[in-house]
Amino acid sequence: METEEQHEPPERDRSSVPGQGTKGRSRSVRLGLAAASVLTVLLLTSAFIVQPFLIPSSSMDPTLRVGDRVLVNKLVYRFGDGPRRGDVVVFDGTDSFSGEADPDANPVVAALREAGAATGLARPAETDYVKRVIGVGGDRVRCCDRRGRIEVNGRPVDEEYLHSGNAPSAVPFDIRVPEGRLWVMGDYRSRSSDSRDHLGEPGGGTVPVERVIGRADWIGWPPSRIESVPSGAGSGHD
Image (cartoon, rainbow, N blue to C red; front, side, top):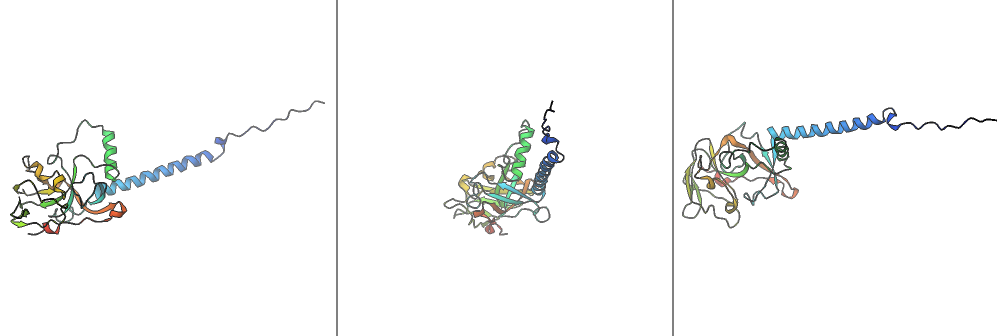
């Protein structure tokens, strides 16, 4: 007697199981949207409110050290007075401390670098600097008096923030800061390229106030360094 062949039921294609493939795809989409949302919030916050800034050099040591991430307050000068003596500011040095940005730079690479700098994950742009305000518009700033101190409007500045063993300046100068501009210097004077290095250039080494990105208010990283950025009270005498 002839018997029927036993056939095993065909194996189901797993990808055709209702919901299984779409669940994985929807999860990936949700994760991607969440990551994009977080990045968007970070970039918007960085653009308009507070921007992390990676300290790239020792020019502000000991106040700020290489690798510190400072939080730059971008609102403080928009709704109040301009920079004051003693403030630690981040500014765009284009046309004052450095030349124009490279017009031939790859726009994709430039955008990625800008996003990394805006979140404090990458070095800032080559044209961005962090320095301390020593003189504001109308001030006469000179170095130095008989005791080797910098004078602002004829009064010596008590610079307790200076790096140990550093003189206020090894370079003599005497300048009247134009209105709307700032005279800025690093706290580690022997390792800081600042207003003194641009005395012979347009602006006499001063920085336009409109180029100031914001005030460095807090050190946010590393955890052992979390603290407010001290202003130079000694630079505030009128």
